[in-house]
Length: 251
Image (cartoon, rainbow, N blue to C red; front, side, top):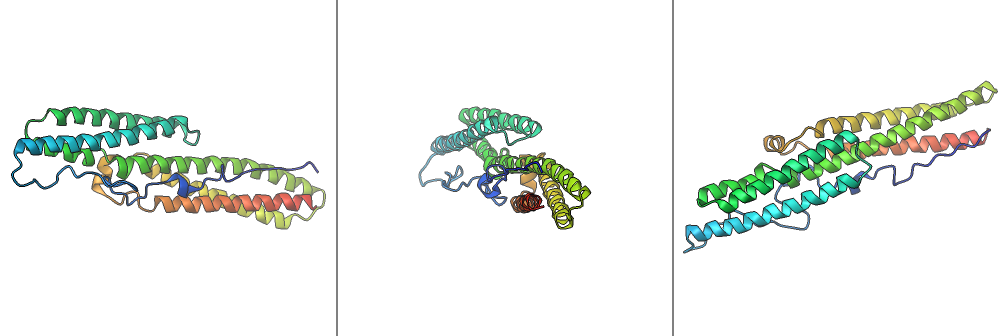
């Protein structure tokens, strides 16, 4: 019988945890290693409105610059990765470019403010209107993870078809392949489960905008765990495939 071989290593079976650094409970003005400067800190005693305005602009500009840096890094990741579908890559690129343009425009507006109240509204918009850390970054990594799982599902499905052909051929020759066929059935079930989960996560996350997060801070809740489950399903499917290959060699 012709030798069967199949590789689906850790580099192709996605480890979701390492790809999703931001959780669904992320707060927009918080990162793992950085506590941002508050743009609306209490006024110091004796501080004039002009001094408060200048301080607010300095802090606001720093927050905008920090977000622009994160978005530019994310853009580079998206442009260089092969893990995203063409549609997701295009949509994410457009959203990131809009965020960058909006933040640059907001910086110009903030820097030109002469009224403290207006400047405070601009500073608040840095968080409320863009949600870089709470939504955009975790959204991108969730899509990258779900697309990788779906790509692995396609590879597993193609290999399942080859295994079925070999089992059918062996059965036609009078070999007992019933146990291996049970493994193949389970393999296909695991693939289908993983695909359903990853597709659902992708469909939920893909259209999200900052306004969606503002309406529901828990909108990404559970998505990372769902992808972990899908990853485990693909690992189970891979284990079935290995068992079938081994069984075929012993016939």
